Image 1: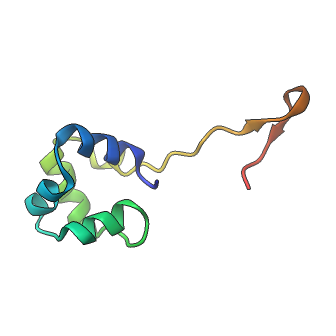
Image 2: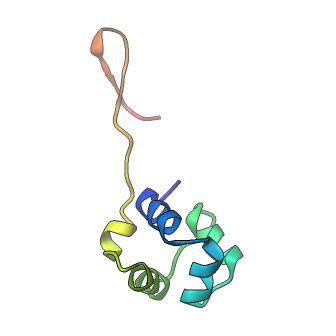
Length: 79
């Protein structure tokens, strides 16, 4: 998942197909972009933020999971 904030916002806004229609793209294009198989254009990012009424920067923030802790509390880097 590339954009957890965006996925959360869409889930709370409505079905993917309605968002795709609202920003003028196909459902398959939106899905490919959401799950990292394609990249949103700058125009698509701006349209999504406008439709959802949320900050583009926040929506498209890529979140890193915290480092894992191993035995004796040692921190392990992500693979």
